Length: 85
Image 1 (cartoon, one colour):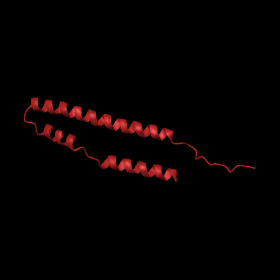
Image 2: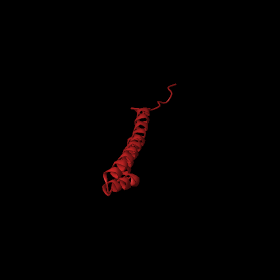
Image 3: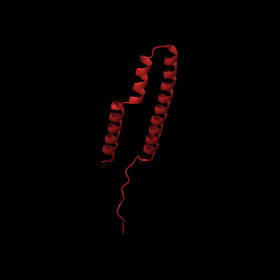
Image 4: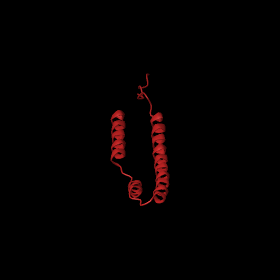
């Protein structure tokens, strides 16, 4: 039962990550491709680097939180034995 929940949660996260799009980064990348001169292109690339670093930091924090939560999951299922009289 717990294994099924873990698998479902993992599938949800992977599908959401695969199909997620960062529109802000895509817009900046498109601006870089359409920049008229090198100076503007250089500025846009720097801005793009900053945005990508921010996104990378967010994703890293989420993955660290998932790893920490996974460490807390017990490896064996606890079964309480009835008290012997």
